[in-house]
Image (cartoon, rainbow, N blue to C red):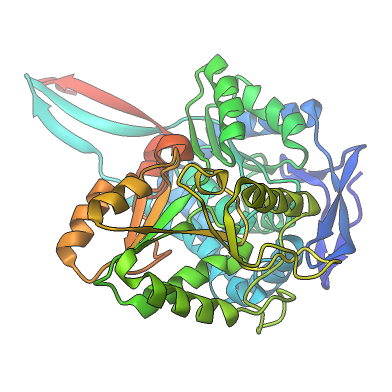
Length: 487
């Protein structure tokens, strides 16, 4: 029997899994609490296990032939209906995401939820617009076809759960695959609402399945299933290694975006005020953004002026309830994560790094952490080399372009970078020299959905975005026919 829905800020949310077009309860549950007030229990959510994982993969495998046979145009019709329903329900989706994960409500309502609708529209249209590569060679006619691969497992993190779930699900569905989504246990509730909308849009049963639970339990069972033919993960390098080991057993292709430690490089010829404002903006969402430029690298000649501006913009931040439009910095997601962030800063102090500002909780009874800036004693400090994933930035100076590039490339990560310069030549030169999957010059977080996205080093494997994602979720086949073959 399905469980009763839970009222969350006047929105009814199912705490159950969604498998084969119906709600499925579990005997065991886990608590979901709001970062806005840790005493506020939002729901007891169904806790999946190996049996639930098997049920979901079975449903996806059974639904796959019909969904694949619908072709890009047939699938696009259903995906466009889902996108329209998302746009019709922005307010409900935004408030649930806000109280579940603590992302700013204003941002969710204005941009983030609609971006989920655009993910489904854009990938559906890209799949329809695909033109097979056709050419003649050595007496044959050749065609490269995209063939649906099979059931795909999507594993998303607790930060930006709506955005990342739709970003990953959409290309898998557009390519003709069926999907099992496993959202993070700290923020699973917007995924449950997505299941309701997919059901309303008319997705055939089993095409989209959502399984909740702990990664080591239901997540591990999903990625080990030999019927799964694609795995897409966003998480930590440690999780990526575990998923990679499971995928290797069945030779299941997988992509993994595994976090970053991006440099924010400011040259003396830059618009220093714009750079300082953007640097202070890296505290948005409490720094829980994998793409953030958390390592500020500033040319020595402008260091004093830059820091003065940076502190002024950082002082303007407002910590508070994410539902309040005045708030600019939200709380951290979970007490365990608060302890992680605190541990990084305390170890930095003990190691001799200088905490320039912040470095403590805002309130004793909440999950807010003050915007923090650390000046490391050297480039080998842990606070420089490892991802903190909180409102903690580091500050270093460089003397010339070569040193800037050396510092930028000195960690094992390579997801993103930000460069501020007034020189087009320098932008091209440094942008080409810095090792990162995405590099912004004089801007940040501007995304073209058709561009490749992914990391270098331990920041990830493979690329998402546009045709890159559709190719990953397809089996590419070359059909080669001898010239002169007739019907």
